[in-house]
Length: 256
Image (cartoon, rainbow, N blue to C red; front, side):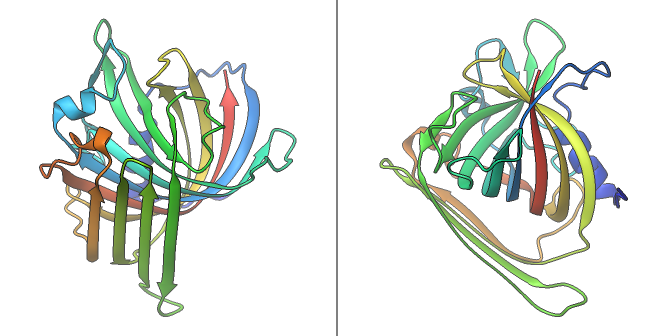
């Protein structure tokens, strides 16, 4: 497989894989593969708001470098188009949508860093390996128009609704040069810090904007929430540090 990388993509996936390097001597079990598209929004929110989403013994820290530098919360909008088990048989359901909150944290009694899955608002609440799922309706409307060569106009509108409130995101921008890259990472559960899954994925990536890399947004973006448990996160003081659009991600999921 030929992998094309630009500097932004290399930093993006290096930072997302910060949690812990994977052991060279692997004893893992493949549990499934999924294909999805994602919009990842890196945000700087109040420290206490991010801390409340983490387990005891771990302290929130911002991403230290790369396009997500300065962000202490990731909001990942996930549109899963196909999910299969280890034998490549489609799951039931075989597709889903979700809005997932993740954060980087440092161990208070040590030097370990981990990426935690803190909340998942999902159309598939019964599949809950991290123990953080909330049932939600997640709707998406997306369009891509423009020339065969050069930048295209991308619009992406999401609405996540629970009985308590809604979260809405709108993104409109001109696409840039996309990159195809491979990476791997561990993600831990905020509900059970001893549980983690290992991901290896190939992704098509478009860095929409990044304050750290001085890359401005070529369009418009809004993110609003009326979900009560996220009131501390979305209190008007939050800042968007980066937006990463992933039109295609093919991801294998392993358990240790």
